[in-house]
Image 1 (cartoon, protein in one colour):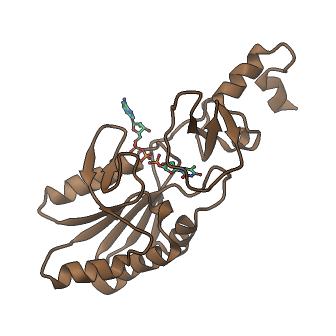
Image 2 (cartoon, rainbow, N blue to C red):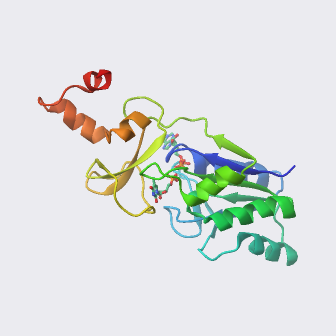
Length: 219
Ligand SMILES: Nc1ncnc2c1ncn2[C@@H]1O[C@H](COP(=O)(O)OP(=O)(O)O)[C@@H](O)[C@H]1O
Ligand SMILES: Cc1cn([C@H]2C[C@H](O)[C@@H](COP(=O)(O)O)O2)c(=O)[nH]c1=O
């Protein structure tokens, strides 16, 4: 049975790498994928991984009907055996419905990859719809880690190393940015709730006025 699968995780946990591996394994067996992406850091029309691999993709615009696009592609005699959608958190709920229809009406597997929550730990609308509709939600097995060593479960947006909680939901960016730039850092829930990034924890540990993290966490 074809499926809609949502591979979800924090930033930097290997989602795009897995998307490229699925694409590689299937195309090595002669299958033809339709690859969609939106707002990839490598630029429009790309699906890229931090491991350095990149492939061409259809850039999903706000008004793209993904189901109609596939129907048109197939009716022109072109092939599509499966669908990959990276950065799926940026798709609209309507576009996720279209992907579900691709599974149900066209009989294709759809593999969607994305982060579930934003920097304020609120669901992206596209991810919410994926959780509602997916046949399976798969959490990636390689754990991204918080600076404290715990499994990272949340995405923080940082400015000058400090966590920020105000701003637009969508700001394309990366982890490990220079400290003076807006970037992202993955954290465990405890440190996301306490707004403690690696930089602020380090600063706290250096300040004689601040209790060590261990003491804070026992209180
Ligand atoms: N130099 C490296 N050596 C080994 N693995 C790396 C290296 N750089 C990045 N990675 C791996 O790549 C992962 C990020 O992959 P990527 O597919 O870009 O993540 P995502 O799409 O989830 O943001 C990291 O979690 C890490 O496992
Ligand atoms: C948390 C959060 C992230 N983003 C952006 C930042 C990146 O461009 C992508 C995530 O890409 P990745 O391949 O999973 O690293 O999402 C955003 O726009 N808003 C946020 O709150």
